[in-house]
Amino acid sequence: MLRDKTVKRYIFLREQGRCYYCGKRLNMKNATLDHYLPRSAGGPGQFYNLVLCCKPCNFYKQAEYPANPEEQMMELFRRGVEDGFVEFERPIGREQGRQLCAGIERIITYGKGRIVFQSGDYRIVAEENRVISIKRTR
Ligand SMILES: [Zn+2]
Image (cartoon, rainbow, N blue to C red; front, side, top):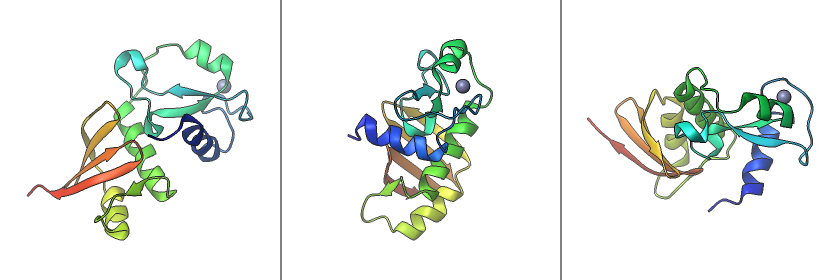
């Protein structure tokens, strides 16, 4: 299990220390993490659904349903791969893994810390920030 602090530090760096919604500069202490797709709507508490957020934005946003939550999750997952935050379990080759993740085109399912993507002919399964399997589907 990844520690919350590790995830928060990564997201802080990814967002360059700014609130995702209003752009206000934050520090590690006053920054909160917001579920882009709210928890109440089944939004996972994973780096690909969390954004850095100031307290007022987090309060006012509440449980609003965002536009294109799946696009956002795919985008943040691909970004996590580019940033080297996503790891590949052996025997998945790092280069092949990176290439296939760059081509992620849809989400098959997600929940309980696990997400499944389709990328071309391949199905990619990730747990938290680890890709645990890549299988050809056709
Ligand atoms: Zn804000």
